[in-house]
Image (tube, rainbow, N blue to C red; front, side, top):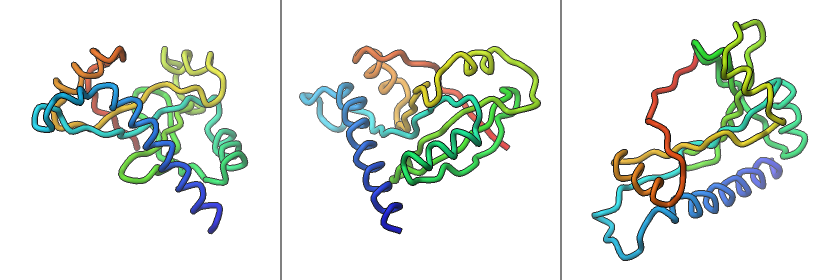
Length: 149
């Protein structure tokens, strides 16, 4: 119980710091709140080679257990998740054993364990947030729906 509370506290602090660094760089303090889209970190994505091994290693290193999330149709991957509080979460992607090879699976196989892949935001204004992130020097991809079984 104490480990879980400490892990959640650390996750909340890390999320707040990262969100502040990532999104704070996007907001011009001179702008009024009404001119700035409301946005927050939705999730962070890490790569793994073997999801079950990654879950065990993550738990050994942090005391927190990644929960199996499901498979991604058409991508040949599956994931495990950890809540970071306030609706944010950590997602670990790995190739799904037995699935057909894909370009994304091949890419994952080239990465060291727990390599940061991406992060996503939730926003009330996609265009404004995209512009703010681009202006701040971040590479922005198109908004895309994701799904898992």
